[in-house]
Image 1 (cartoon, one colour):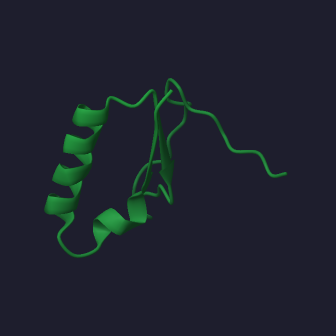
Image 2 (image 1 turned 120 degrees about the vertical axis):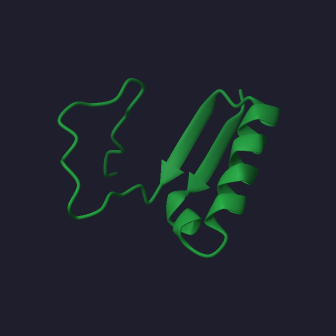
Length: 62
């Protein structure tokens, strides 16, 4: 099983497009079974997501 992680906050810093391109190429190349995203957020003006996307699992506190 292959696991790939990405701290999404790092994408919004300098060189966003290059970083995104590198990540996409890595996903295509490695074909991970699971992709875990950290620090996923949205703008304060965006509508709230009302349903859980397919494959979404909320991390529980220990």
